[in-house]
Image 1 (cartoon, helix red, strand yellow):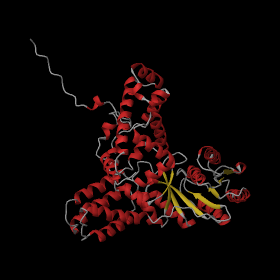
Image 2 (image 1 turned 30 degrees about the vertical axis):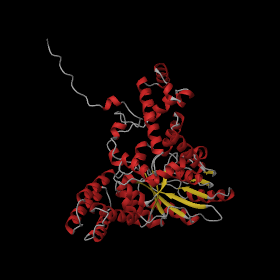
Image 3 (image 1 turned 180 degrees about the vertical axis):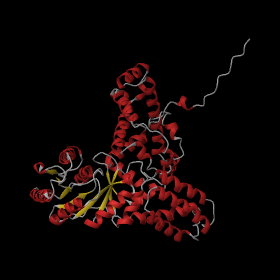
Image 4 (image 1 turned 90 degrees about the vertical axis):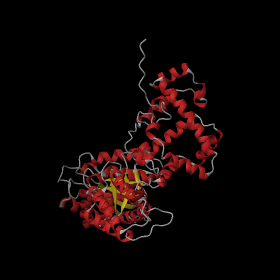
Length: 493
């Protein structure tokens, strides 16, 4: 989302590097560029002016620390201001006892409100909460059915021991303008049902409109008065920029919001809503939606977003994603195999599947400091992971355990079974051998040496690692990376 803004910040900090003191003139020149970048990112004008004024106040005349260069000192100042701009945020949901905790979800049509209800239910199920989803949007075609399907998916697919319930009164669904007042009754009945089921949380999926109007606000106010929900979240689309902020301001004036959920945060939009909504409305962003899958809802952490924005990566979020997929026992077992050089193709396949569950390859690599900027223009073919899985699954157990036994005939058989070429099998085996040897070396290093080795990854030619085909494959074709020379013409005798 913040790719353009990150580039602008990097250019500014690069120009400030090499100076012994941050002077008034060079800071003001730098902040002029930052101001332009923020306005281009569709950040609210008043927010931009306040942000730049605070940075100038802290930066002008600031002595550079002995261990830091001016550019790094400026990064620290800007980082702190970005965190203050978007925070502080407490993304935890406060539960009442006895339950249920009533969460009212509101927003405009197309913002992803109903989908976010399903994601929030999955988030709570993972934390072993019993949740009821109530369909209170009675005027949008198929809204009730959509929420019912989502609740069934969360019940069947989402991890966790929590229970998922669904409540709806489809007989009350009517065409636009004729279901006024019915939503209040549905919500009241849903609260009774949630109490009977002893649910911890009741999520109300209220109606939306194409724009903010009196009818919409009147219905939401009636629901608010009848149930007095403990939390009111506004779901807004990050792609709508300043319109999203204006909508949030209008909703907050009518309902007194507790927080905002920003959807489509994984899009290529400029990010103005994320930087503006807290300052304009006074309400924090609680969660961000990062995709269409049920688990694509994350707690909002201003310090991590600021770190990504400044090109410093987000190692904490990456570690958390890894911990969700790999237990400590599995990690220790794999570490031991790597140290002994006994990692097999089965181990590698298991890690590939874990990576798939963590998110896209490009987004994960973008969380590593120093690598995200190199990946910016690199085309990554996520389907290559599917092809790699097909190659490994086409091998026999013996071949996966000892890839060295794969000869020409086995290579052709594996290629036919996976729908690939024999050369692809060779590249995979060679690449796996390289990774196994590298893993063995890294496993035997001290912690300091490991950190240096990982830091060196940031300077690697990622295009070469992709095998020249724009995909996250192991190894690649070595011959494809060699410089090509024109053949000499044969001398005529």
